[in-house]
Image (cartoon, rainbow, N blue to C red; front, top):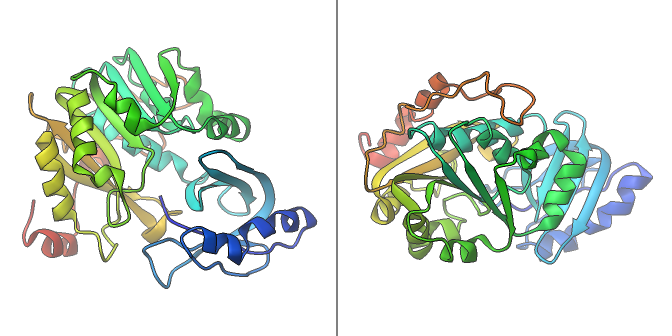
Length: 330
């Protein structure tokens, strides 16, 4: 969810063998961002947040691989557990990954009664699949992930997250999510979750595109819901009102913004854009499909962050955001 990063030279021989991949020339290749040279530390320098960086002390490099599509780097940190960097962007840390996975999943699925067919674009780590598995009403889970390398790496290094693939309702499609959506018959899904693109905001491309949003809406049944990550309220160039207006044109139903704390991401928070198609009304702020914490699905325990109180609270905006972005309120 963050943006481009640089890997600082590390102290151990094993880490030093990898640092040339994350030296300044490599960072320049990735959007011309600068890296910080602090021995033994990984510097997350997020795109769109000038003058800021988040440092993680590196204990051990676990994996670095390049596929046709992506560059994947995994290391053991001293304070956040294992950390995943994908194409220079921080994806998750073991310390707080459950927050994003749970909210992206349960905010939409708990807002409609008895969701049955769910599509996940991206989400190759399997964490969102794990969270979807908690919903017993769901009888079909399609996931379209472009990169098998990502899936294999998560199954190897994060088995408790990738456990989502063990759900027998999961159907895996390896391919481009944008192209996959073009093949989906109209009105197929009750919910579509997007986890393959930049957050909806100044740096995004696909999720802000009119035609792409309309293709998502077309694949949903009347009153179906979409959820995707959106930028932080603290991002100076993020105009929430503009994106709400854009989504309303495509989906014709309800559109809302929610947020939660995520310590590893830039500004310590992340947003979510939730949209419904025209049809049965959806009130995202008040869950109607209450999650049963005793139904684990394929997970090994109950949710660690999400509950019905958090669900409703996630839509409360701070005063500065209301004043700056809406003049009064939504």
